Length: 398
Image 1 (cartoon, rainbow, N blue to C red):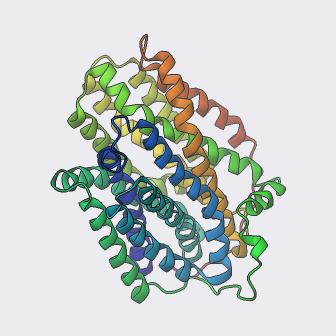
Image 2 (image 1 turned 45 degrees about the horizontal axis):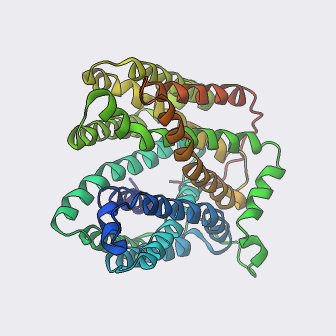
Image 3 (image 1 turned 45 degrees about the vertical axis):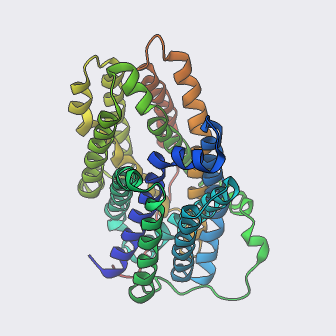
């Protein structure tokens, strides 16, 4: 694998680790800084701040990367991430912790820039495979994050943040010396109006061909929020899982999904094309969700994991499809819009699915998975009716 891709994928892993390591230690840290016995409202606030900052700044960073280049924007975001973790590690008050989470959300918006970088250096026929690796790297980081956060947090509650700051600082140095620019920056005077986070959204929705793609990305991302919101509740209510089994189940799924996206997405797209691959992914996920909804024994959940993970091939196929719909000078802006859409789903999804789970919890907790199949059914006609164009070759050989 070429050096630039190694740097980019390392950044993706670190972003995911940073997100995941907060889960097991955030309640304890909020207890410390708020001195409150009930920190649930504060958890909601910190989660919302993170997602809102991603929503606002993903298109801004994407547009800036088109203008200034991918490399400087990535370097600044990695440095900002290190600062955010140091701030959270030293937070003695709630406002310090919230500022740290806000900066972390802002810098994690660099995923849009990383996606644009991969698009720049990857031939069209290899993009689906590399986006599969992209998602696999995020999945690996999200497996490592909670485990690392729990282990280090048991030793000292603030240690995970210090470790995350050190990792991001090292990655910034690696990018500084090993990451070349992927495309010639547009240069010229920066139009401050272009930094309005709503403007790229208006641009995207003004192009009729992009609106269905944006809608599909939103629905895909929205549906994915059900797992982080309801998995632990469902496991405890249905199988009486404790924290260990919840962690093992999530880890097993993460490993299966990482392997599928890293090694099967590329061959699937070559064999079937992007659109059929999306449908195969939806079908596999729907089958697994039905089995999980009806499962009476926990071993059934682990047995269906490989099929469940196959559902993950749809997302990188959709990413590959989307890159062909805009020109080279708009990739960063478009990826920024998609990242904002994903962040918006991260704000709305947990509220919707937690409300549905509240309604079905006593009678049939597994029904929450059937609600996600309904969401998938909305995607099918939208994908079928997509009107796509072919992209002209535009890449630096990678």
